[in-house]
Image (cartoon, rainbow, N blue to C red):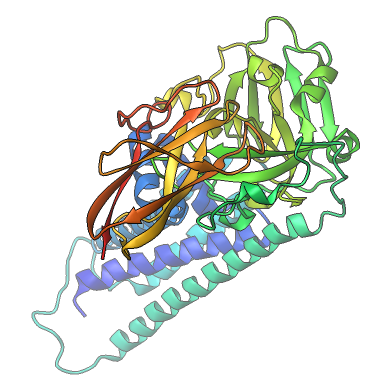
Length: 509
């Protein structure tokens, strides 16, 4: 084997073993994943446009993409170390030490205990460097040795090194799989082991049980199942805590700072509300929107216990993984159903959606309000900035009126004759008054609407269409409860949400 490929493979194998070993040891000690810590640093350092592009391209698979790209970059760097070590073997050790130090800084920069992760990084770096050194082709310092042509006979040394390399890669894959399985098992256990049952709510939406008339077409369920509910956040690893040690701090510009346990929250009056959440990254006609039944404690009840000072301008919240956001105090005190949610669709909050507690604030995009894995609520002035504001997003982010066509889908072929055009529309905290559909630019037809369960919940709509053969363009627009019709002009999602009429083109045969 030529010494250059052999050296690159030696570095690559060592890097794979280093990462897999660090992940496995950190999983054994139930510590933060070093790989995810490095990925989080990359996310934090990325420009807003890059992050938005990843979400646009990969959707809810953005985290898998970021992990893969982190592995690719680290693998290329490790291969480069192997090539460098052909003439200076000490550079390989120095490189692994440097990567270990960088990983240690990434871990220390994240919230939570770091000791187990630091040990994992040290063990992984040592294992990776040792393996790479053993696989490197022997060479005199400063001399590059290469065969003038491929060997005409198999060499035992080549076979042994191939076996070691293949074993290292295979072992790294196994360790990585075991690490992921251990973490996932703990994530599931974090919710399953909760002995508490959600108490019955003392207040529900005026409809009581959701009426059948809320769902007038099967294109999308009125209540989005938790497994189908969109998830957009910056957490590569799901933050976890035990309920006996979890506390919610309420402090800042308050007269009586609080620290509430999970049982304290369960003992307070519970409400259950149907509320639609929407991500600011949702393009016109996009899928980053969902409607759920949220159960929890009114945020106003907690704020009343703490006593809000007159100088407080925003509610600044922090998650277990250090993510932050802030929204105006008035948005919590103006009568809307802002909640510290403990349950979703009749069950405990899934870990992916914020267990043990999260904020749900109708009418505001999630990047300024919907803190998952809630740890702290601080009453503050506008001198504090949440995670996304310094990255170019607007400080104030009321949800914009939007409507979406769910059937027929873009580019779909449908049969001529009577067809349903259907979808959903939302304008949280204002409600939906009217939805209209236009076919091929003709006059607007008013759609039939599903029941108005809440001004904070979306409404289904449907129009019956006598479809004729050919290509057709379908447009939709909604008017909110204040009489404002969504604008036709298309704008991007940044800095405060997209606008425009959702339009699809279909073929009738």
